[in-house]
Amino acid sequence: MNCYREHAEMEFKACVWDLEKDSMQKLMCNQVCELLDLFSTHGHSGLSAPYAINMFEKLAQFEPLCPLTGEDWEWSEVSKGLWQNKRCSHVFKDKDGGAWDINGKVFCDPDGTSWTNGESKVAVTFPYTPKTEYVKRGA
Image (tube, rainbow, N blue to C red; front, side, top):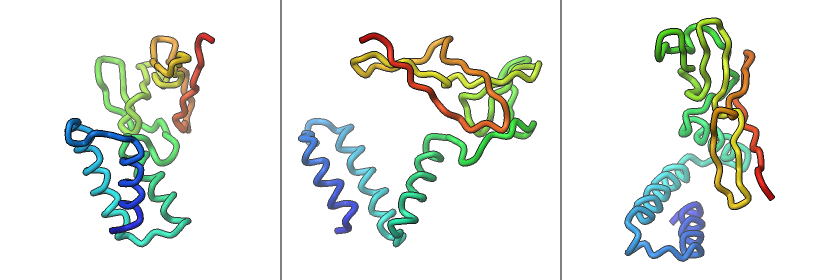
């Protein structure tokens, strides 16, 4: 057994999940172990492992690896006069060329609940590296 899997199994145990009763959690644990098993075969060092993990995380979440350029090839028209960025689906532009990120602000309650709304939209200028501001609400 590799050290990644050993660590994962120790963490799963610490979470006290009943994997016999929670089939979805069991599925997630098994799938994560499969990813860790593959990752362990690549021989990453302490330098390359975080780099690979960061790259994988961004790509798995459909986030760009480098700044958006705003060039024509990055856009798909989703309705008349409205384009969505192909590299980052939460970035849009209109027929006048104005661009915005609908996830620019995420609002958070003290209990950890978070959401976006019309106030989440922030203007974008290119080149643009997507970022999210987390706005805490309430006490």
